[in-house]
Length: 301
Image (cartoon, rainbow, N blue to C red; front, top):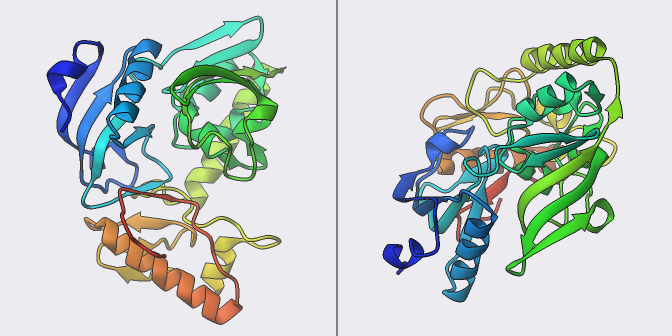
């Protein structure tokens, strides 16, 4: 059992008990967190991570809540949200210093305002910079890792600064998964502000037309198999519009599952199983989930 009074001796941020998590996720699904903490600075994060480690308490860092599905039973232990204390942006001679709690859209707009090009294609990703780095989120041929210079993390309870080469960036993953990302610096290219802004608007318009942004979802459910597209495989198997409970395979984009009517996490899991099994039986291709499952003890999909 966590002692709140003990934590408050070293923790300056806000602590909430039994915090409902659905409103913090783009899926609008998920149970409660035992403890929801909002650190205000690096010391807060280091101290709460150390406390959790010393007392064998599980902890999870939540960004914008995209690309994840949280169990209906919620998350045991501590959920750390960095949007309060790590929501800053700085331009230091063309190098952008960005707190992990900054949303990708704001990051991209800040770069555009500073006439810096390279991340405008990522503006539509509904993630914080920290979350986007951990999963190396990408869109329209670009990845979050493309212009990374350094990443500040807490690993093994210690503050470290990693160069890009030390971050283990790969397609939709990285070596940062066991770290708490606090900050990143990006070395971007100078460009024409109006041209970059125009490109951003075009990409956002295309995204809004191609993806079900009007209905709660967690982004692409499956990774693209080698030399193929998950959405195309799902569509070819006639799965668009397939439902389970309140979850549905989007009519607009087959690699999206949407929460169209008060879906539970279990509804989504069962629909994922239907899609995976159907695609495997009809094409022989095993789809791999891109969405991360959080708070599930034993679930096979």
